[in-house]
Image 1: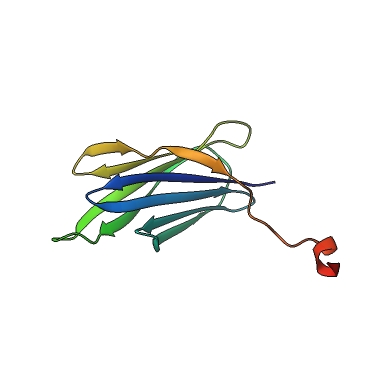
Image 2 (image 1 turned 90 degrees about the vertical axis):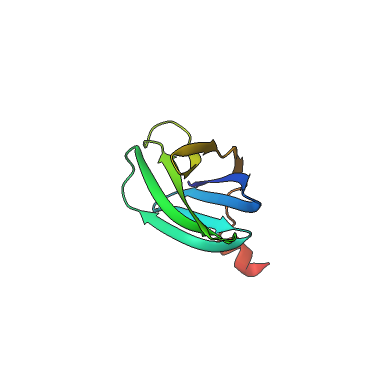
Length: 109
């Protein structure tokens, strides 16, 4: 069974969100001001750190990197930080309700 996590911070007047799904295939989505700007599908279940790049719609536009730490198969929780010009900004996270997937019983409802 998979789990969903949501990491969020405000940076340079923009809302930056990283959504992490830990399931059969791991997925990471980065949203800026509610719009998906980067996505990554990760095969395998070993602990690892992956990075995604996003551009904040400021004047001038600012590139940022979102580092997501994915846990190993057995234990651990994901984590995320926003990196800009060598500075690291924590992205507080929370586990969210698992994505609803249709079941056979729901077909008859």
